[in-house]
Length: 472
Ligand code: NAD
Image (cartoon, rainbow, N blue to C red; front, side, top):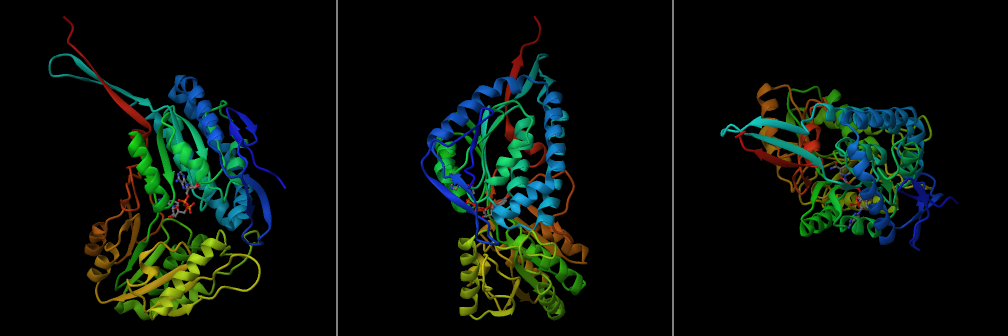
């Protein structure tokens, strides 16, 4: 069985720690790798390497860095299917879905890095006294990227692009549940030693990384619970963090929409990647005028999400990442049923190997149920029938989370009203779409720190203003 290694200063090394855990293929329950569980010594050495490599990386011109990153992006895109196959083995995502997301993420990485060419790392403006002010935005130095298991490669690339293009170096810590794709991603890397370092492990690696005061920024993607701990630590150190956390995203389906087409879109939003997307639709509010045909079509759509090993071409829905995650999903459904919800599709743990859970539609749900208040992270669509669009919007907005929200409506006034839902992203008549001009900050408990396009460069740099007096 292969034991995974860290990458420190360009050298693949065994962990200095003595704790290891198994990585398990969730479709077959077979052990596919042995992973270090993390040690502070690994982290210290990785940060050392990132600190050492940073001045030379920052000394390259922006165009040189962008060129290097662009080449790496092309290599990743050319290996998208291989990386997707690894993701499938470590966390269950169907290979076709993984390939599409990784290909898209590689192009997104390239585009985000190229934005550095337009970003004002230095600008001089005249001062009222006849002198000038020069604003220099310098990289932060060594930074940390901590990612979850649900989109291992895309989440990593999303965080890395602007940090690296701005001249920072990185210590990457992937999830202990999906470390294999990160190893392969960095094997494919063609950047100078120490520019990206890899430390494997769980919070035993994550916590010391966040606590290292040489780390100028922690870009953390994960649960609210862990994000809160990271924020407390970086706050105490007076270091910067971007926290992209969990959600309980609503979708509001208005009267006047095509109920069948909208149900197909909502099925994809709720069930894709087995519901393990931070912006999965987890609460469905449907107007009573279209409720009946919408629910009927949603139930029918759920039946088409064929469960299976993500390596099989016919599989639409892979397993959940592990037994722990499936237990959460089953508990949420059982809680809803015990409080009066009706299972219209799915809702039963299949027999046999693998941590599968079927696409599930629940009706008769309300906000007393876990499935409507806590992040489920499973293929569950709980549907509430509302008597007006306004009621749907209000109930959609009444959540401690605020990651993203979706509205389907044909009414222009209701399209405009969609922005009232407090969230970092609001989609109208689409889900997951949008151009490169992405600027967002999650609301409520879903995180903090604006990012996307220019904001990602603002976060990756620190401005200094140099005021020069007028010439004597
Ligand atoms: P998690 O919080 O358990 O772990 C995320 C990462 O943080 C892992 O690498 C983990 O090892 C590390 N970690 C855990 N405790 C830590 C600590 N104390 N200090 C430092 N690092 C620590 O989350 P998960 O279960 O891996 O991922 C699922 C969660 O991620 C869901 O809540 C999902 O909504 C969220 N998510 C959010 C986004 C987003 O963009 N907002 C994207 C994807 C996933």
